[in-house]
Image (tube, rainbow, N blue to C red; front, top):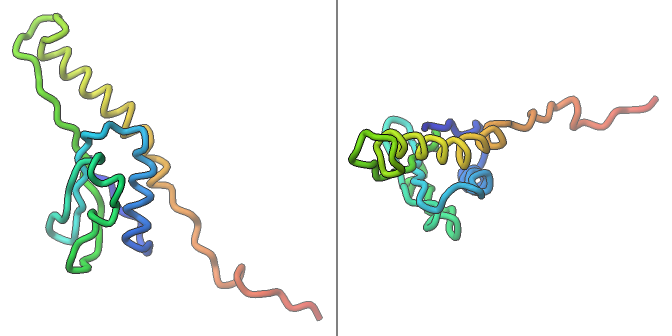
Length: 125
């Protein structure tokens, strides 16, 4: 799943915010930084949580978003057994949706930009 990065925010702040939002996500979730026209640094949450700066590109390129992936081995049978392929797919989708997608709304919500008018003191006269 690709998630766009908020415009106008500091790259390290964006990376930290994403990792905070993914607090409940599994440690084996892969996060890849998307740059303008190319892919950037990537790693698992387990490795990135202690050092969010590892998501930042070394050349200072603008971050356009993040790609989130959760890899799962699939069962070899088609049956309804717990190790079956269909059950494995259902479990993987439920796990990704419940622990990742449901929390991304907090990341995508942007604070309204302060207007110049609101920042200036009002003169009383």
